[in-house]
Length: 313
Image 1 (cartoon, helix red, strand yellow):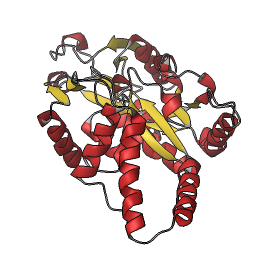
Image 2 (cartoon, one colour; image 1 turned 180 degrees about the vertical axis):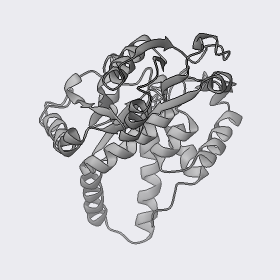
Image 3 (tube, helix red, strand yellow; image 1 turned 135 degrees about the horizontal axis):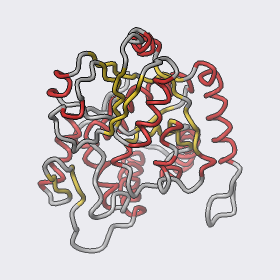
């Protein structure tokens, strides 16, 4: 049974990233939940580790905005220094236990092969609920380790350098512009509305009109096209971002709302609506079967491209 990393290990791993410049000064750390998933820990442990970093002046937390890497005194520590120090400690302990240099060399080679063989892909989404759901779907379909990346927390990252492949729903392809260098490393996810949500839309066909709500203009267009395949009446689209007032004034007496998880529907608006149909996404069954092969093709193509500055595959 794998043991989740404790506070000390989580603290050290985040600190290593700060010292090496992986999280540069001024950048926002991923959420505790995202870090917990990535590091195989839990949110409480990550929160305590970040608290320790804050006490040491490494990070600062801004209410309602997140945790940011603080300006450090002195030059950024070379990543090699960080790794070399820990490697020295491990090798010294191994030598004291009686391992020879030849044995240690062999163990390091085996460990490197094992690490290099691990395939990692990122799944990108715009909201936490869809992100966790799509992460589970892709992991189950691909059989590859999947790490969640929230769009709002990905600024400044180069995802195709961090991961072997980047999986993103087709309707978010434009949103990852600037987050990847090579679009050939992107696996487009064909998501469809869940059958349960579609049945509910079909069930309100007798209504003269309904409202489609999404967090962006493009989201409204996408949702309107989806609902229009199953609903024959008038569809009114409403763009409702996170800063929209929760007064429900835009409802105009409409009895049915169709929303996606990216939309911020407050309790007042939800109470005024007669019926709320939430769209949950699933992988298209036809695409689902081919996803594993698609991921492997992307990773295999990447493997034969020389690494920058080395000339090696």
